[in-house]
Image (cartoon, rainbow, N blue to C red; front, side, top):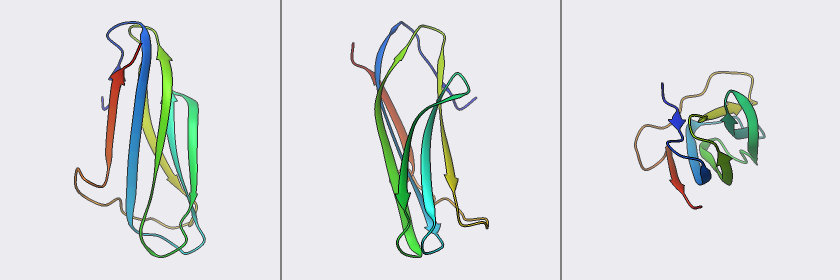
Length: 98
């Protein structure tokens, strides 16, 4: 399902990074964590140029066992843009910290 499901109650350090191959100058990129389908935390970034535009979102999130976390990306250019390929440019990492 491309979701992280918490195996036990706890606080989790979640890190998400995403990059587009191209982006419209002046557009915004939003990286969003969704907890159980609802918005939780967001990072916005002004694209600033037309190549290799990206951002990251870092948060500590409490998840009871069985609840899930997803990563979503939006961009404001008004046209379709492609996410870069590769594990070094787009990734999600999570670990329980307490």
